[in-house]
Image (tube, rainbow, N blue to C red; front, side, top):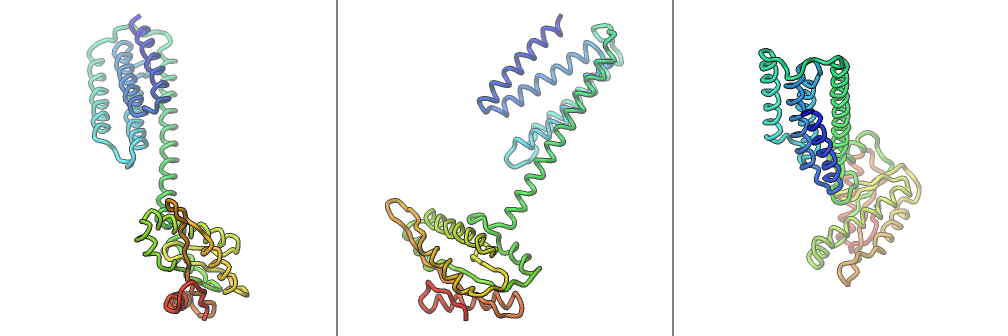
Length: 296
């Protein structure tokens, strides 16, 4: 009778959990559920004994507590309360074991004890497999995200210097171009850093779209393009320069425009020489008026 009434309370708790999920109160729902399941395990073990398998929930609770807490936390770290809860479960498990060595359970063993033991064992191990699988997927997604962040510029989302260096080291391209926005500091000073960031993002989107169209990979930070040897590379880059100069960024009631200078190299023997010459030509273009493509 007592356990039956408690099961009604458990049902009410799970219904409350659905309400909390709909209201995006996940941490509170998780805490309430862990309290309910812990109480459920202790009461059933004390009253029915070890032959029903309710003690398996102790293992499931400890493991799932760590996995769930890490998934819910923003920094993916284990909170001290989770460790304290795991210690509490471990001590409680041992206390139950000692108690039942010296005392009989409240209720005599029923004929369904073996079936309940197998059911609880299967349920807990299924839960552990599910949680572990979910945790591995989460870890994989985090790892992929960190790998992407380590190799891409945060603002423009273009490959960064490290990524592009490894790519260029693997195979010498037919040409390399380095781009730089003219008087970019003036945009930041006049319109603010938010407008400056949007200018960079706009330039990056145009550059990326152009790179995909021309099969010429691009990189962030210093805006770099490269590709296989092909005719009329300077003319192609003039087209890109025109697209960038035609872009407009909204800043309040003003439209921001910008120009770009591009240095390009096709003829050097090594990738490092190509980068050096492209950079040198970029700054020559800066010195001689900006807003141009310099190829020799």
